[in-house]
Length: 323
Image 1: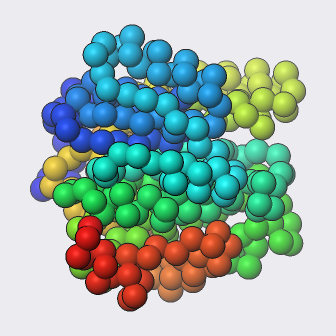
Image 2: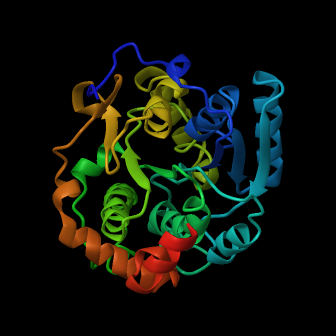
């Protein structure tokens, strides 16, 4: 397949009729655009949102932009393993074709999740890891399952320290964010390697959106950082960041291009991956760092208590028989 298409737009998305998609953090930003675009092309979309009010408002907006679309809201808080388990236990569809791991927080003040994890590591990586593992049986019930995990172009600048993932020694909001986004890329590529080893028909990809306008820097925990922070950040978003639909392109490209290979990393093709059209990037050092990815996977299983049963030796035969 070509590395990129400079004419690729949201209108290039192929028909998604009959496909069942789950998008986390679908009430705003890139997640909202992703959910709307998939629904407009015929997918049944589940909007997984932490707030019932914001989730319902997002559903109303989606249906206004895509009349007759099939969509629903379900509650999910990636900062709470109990919420993630309840969400997975309550899944009553017969399968899941597409999981878009979009939800996350960025450069927030220090806080702990309900389970005691540093919030950026806990939400961005551990919550994503746990949700994917618990939804894996539903994904494997699909004839063509796909997982898209949103990383960040900034992960290239992270100094990944496996001994300080949970702010054991110190906390820097920027450092913790970039490290959590590197963890997203490690997770996506390791998931593909394990699926390949198990002989499972699963495609796992990671994406970087580029500089994109969203409320991730101004909402949630960042909403309490004062008027000056809010004003300066909103000005920066307006001047330097591109419109949200542009940032959603890599997610939608990874989610819908038919012949996209598993293990792909999709980024904008411009300078420093900050803007541009979707392109496959194969030279990322994190993609080749299998030792760190393996170590992170084992740590994540230990911290969350979630094991990807179909990817373990004892679960592979059952998954291949019943998946």
